[in-house]
Length: 315
Image (tube, rainbow, N blue to C red; front, side, top):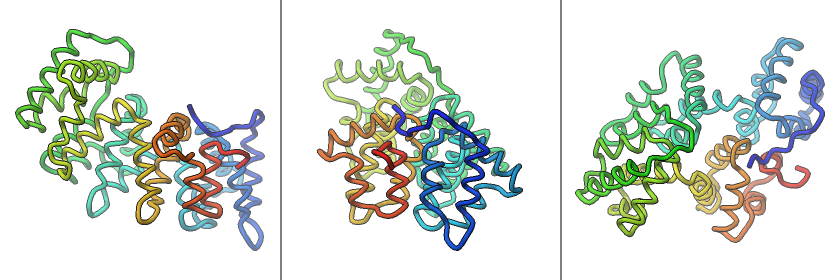
């Protein structure tokens, strides 16, 4: 499901040397940077960073920061980070915005595995000397805080075992809360923030079959309500992440202007996870390939890096 193409032979020392050479001279060799970093997995990128530091006495990320600029710099730097470090950075960045980007926090909380989310919280703690939970709680309020804090605090069972009796019971609990317009109901939030994804799928399938509507349709009573938008997005992230990310990409590319931050975020965080599925979903919904859509909205080294990460041709 990942889209990056990694070579059969790998030498961190050779890659570090080639990167160092790419920084020398009158201009930066962006093509070499793309050919190396866009084709290395997380473990390999971490090893390259370590060897680069040992050999040249400089942090690779700082070297890249000095040599690159604009959207190309952002995609390379985000990609070079380990997944946990990247998510910790993105979460902190979202929290620091004047209007907290709750969507980024929601994505991290709901589309990562329990172990991955735990690693993000460890990385956040190490880098910012605070917990992710306390920062989310401090920078949100009301129903949004009531939803987000349990989601980022979650550590779900990851297996496939499903209790159908429980699924039926909890589908009824959710239906009653929604029918009574108690969208911030503690039981509804408890189910969403603690149950395994397999259990949630069973519960929501039963909800659909028993009550005649997908739950997200019943949650569209007020399309402009920010909390309800987040609640629907949480359900989509937990049950169909490829559909959620396909929509984020569509909105990033097809708006009045390209949202490069969203485009970069989705591709750097999903290229090693499920980008193949996201590409299929994007093509199905938009009748155009993601590669073609990206090429139509981006250019230069930024375009080349994005295309390489989604596995396009020889990029």
